Length: 303
Ligand code: B12
Image 1 (cartoon, rainbow, N blue to C red):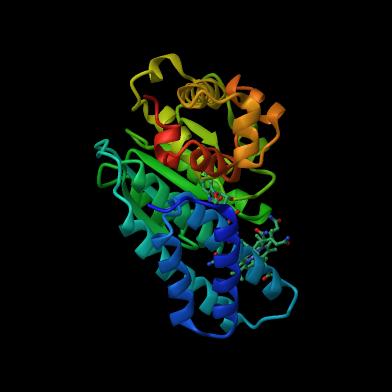
Image 2: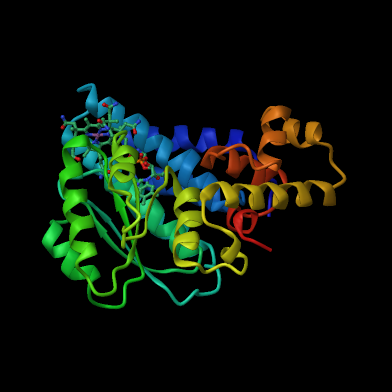
């Protein structure tokens, strides 16, 4: 495997964007083939190439610079490449649990949800991905059958919040309800969940910001890691991730400054991460995993 280098990811992202804007699927596929051949991690490819391209071309669409047709072509091309990327990496051992990943009714932003689905699959979940705009009654019917342990729901706009409330209400009425993790960029989602929390709350819900928090949150909610009995929050998990990063750094006999310079992060950031005081972003986790020569999934798994 060749050394990973995020400048490679940036160049490949530029190649991917140019190919898509020129409606050249072959060149777009070639950019992702190169990323795989260079040994880039799944996190690097999903985040630094495919998500960044989606954000760039989506922004052009929102500014009226590209048509709906071209935006849809870009999205479908990236989603097609995700199948190849997902198949190129082995999943962790099955944890025996099933997750349904969906976009709440009215939400067309399915791209991020798809990344969550793929990361959960890589982390050992059986995943059923429903894509965009899933009608609430149908979603409830779907998760209340088929032995679903977790529902991961993507919510992007404030106007979708009433559907989330309906879903929470419906889950409370189920005999055995799946746990619920919410994310997807809607700024008001956290306050909705806070408001709904009461001592009697029967539905277990947390909010996550990115694929890492989805993986970690899913584990915590469903109690599937060995040390989970000690964990009841993402904060606890950050402490464990910090210890894991410190262990890998020390195995290399590196100082925090050496790790910081090899992954382009600040030393104080590394220190905060190692002490569990910093909520890691996906981008920083990818950089740390690359610098420590490990995969994103191993970096975040409890050893
Ligand atoms: C591409 C895009 C679109 C595409 C979506 C295509 C698709 N199939 O996904 C299309 C063209 C359909 C679209 C439509 C619209 N969009 Co738009 N879109 C974007 C854009 C540019 C990128 C979104 C994206 O894919 N990002 C990359 C992915 C990887 O990030 P993500 O979706 O946030 O997902 C990550 C996290 O949120 C998280 N996550 C996601 N789901 C979940 C679930 C769980 C459980 C967890 C834990 C985490 C999690 O993990 C993901 C990976 O890191 C964003 C701007 C931006 N910078 O993000 C605007 C943006 C989201 N859109 C916006 C708007 C306003 C719209 C429209 C209303 C525009 C319009 N007037 O038509 C419509 C709404 C359609 C609808 N009903 O949903 C706003 C939303 C503002 C807000 N939150 O209030 C944004 C932020 C643009 C802006 N700055 O105004 N959009």
